[in-house]
Image (tube, rainbow, N blue to C red; front, side, top):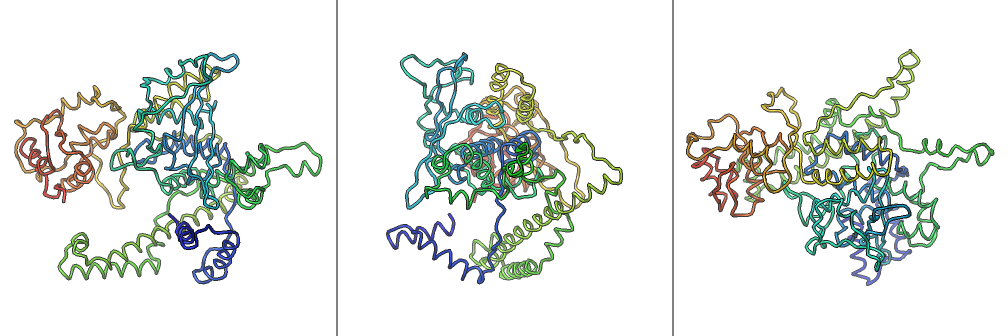
Amino acid sequence: MTYWNVISMVYAVKTARWMDGGVLYDIGNWIHATLTPQFDLDTSKKEKSGLFVEDLDLILHYHYVRDDHVYAHERLRVQLALILIIAGATTTRPDALIGKVLYEDIEFQLLPPGRGGKRCRLGLVVNLVHVKKSAGVSEKKVFGFHEEDTLLHDPVLHMLSLAFADGAFLNEFSSPEQIYEMVVPAHTDRLKIPWKEEWRGRPIFRDVDGLKVSLEKALKYCKTRGDLIRLGRALGYAKRLEFYDIRRGSGKKLNEALTPEERNKAMGHRLGDSSTYVRYYMTDFIGADTQAIAFGSDPQTDFVNLMSRLVRHGNAPTKLTEEQKDEIANDPKLVKYLRKRSQAMARFKKQGYPSYTAAKKAGVAKHYEKYRKRVESLRKTLSAKRLERAISEFHETIYAKEIDQQLQGIKPSELLAPSTIQYELEERAEVARLFSQAADVSSREELFKLRMKLIPALTRLCKRRESPRRPQATRKSAKADSQASTQPINDQPHSSSQLELDVKHDTPTGVTVPKTPGSQRASWTCPFCRWRDLEVGEEQRQRKWRVDSLARHIRSQHLRKIEMPFNCPYGDCRAILGTDQHFANHAARGHGDHYPASIILM
């Protein structure tokens, strides 16, 4: 919730009415006349640019094929793609879409085949309920979507994948082909595909809760916004991407194709004229070929549109250099906060509290907490601004350098370096391969077959997660004990054959393991990740831990989340464990793993 939301609600409660134009005008003057000089507010105007379908496809291709970012769960990757697609097709505000759309707000409909077609046509109806209010009233918007020949931005394909991953259909379809084999009865004009009752009130776009995707926790806008910014940075866009760039780009297309009334309805504008669109959504770049219009020459609108697209360069920086990080570390204000934080720590240690956790429990760490938060906030702000400046400086200078190289006879390579990304998850590799095959499709039937392969592939991807990657230390680190594997793990509740082989080979038994203290062992593996968690990547399954780190991991990521009682996670051990203490005792007696006391939940 923003400060403006709070002010609006307080005003409505105190006055029993919503702010009218006069009040908004006075507030605007107060912001400019009083708040701006008092708090040195930024008065520069934002660049009003549009993100069009060509850029959207570029982002989605990178997102699925080239992106090496590790999401907390791969379902987040598929969700983000669908969010970008719907945002681009509807020009909707991101707050009305992310985390707000429930299963009961969408509906799949089967309609009879079109002229010359054999299969029923599958459509998707999306009812956006949580749209921006005007005078206290929000007017819902309903959109209809169909299949796209470009599978990357096909909303039906992506929504089917999420629904199959959730098992949300009331009728138990075993494959997407079964849906397309349905026939619309002669006595009705369509077949509506219902949801299970327990899924109707659940959000479609959900966040993770620990290691799993939550059933109820809705995805937050700030998290999705960060993913869009990161994708834009990775692709080398000069501008920091925003969801409103998508809204402006799609709004331009709607403005060209619809009447003003239809455009206002789709974009949620209430004034009844074009003033809102012109003021906030018309891009700075005039997309028409004014030269051809004025001079009567042959129009080159496509060429003009190419120039209007957002500037990007694949070699643009995506992170700060060590010198730039040192520059931030030496910022006077940050140095001051760090000194204050250190002084606060010294005070509570002098009082006899060995750690921040102990001081916090005793209620004497407020001063330390205050400056810890200030340090984190300021460092994050300084890093973001410094990266923005580095990207801006790069785009200001790179073209002169490249021209100079060509003048010296150094021509740019016409071939892009092949992607070196290696997929840990076989499901991710399969999705990337199938999307890449779309360019070779030459008929409608081939496209349908590829679609039928992609839906289950995306469904399987929604049930997996990659092993987390930890940032490399600046000092020389030891070589990893094991390499990531691409062997898949079955997504079904039962163990895959590969997992069963691993269990048979690695399962410890309670009678043969020597009862030696666990602290004598050099490295440990997590029994939950190794034998019980079928979503985790191979690298995480084989990861070697220090015993104290493993104890914290098991406590926070497994024991705190698990429903008691639970099955012993060690291989094929069939013991039923009732508490965290029971697990620790059983691990020591039955499997020879002596965990430290920190594994017990406090």
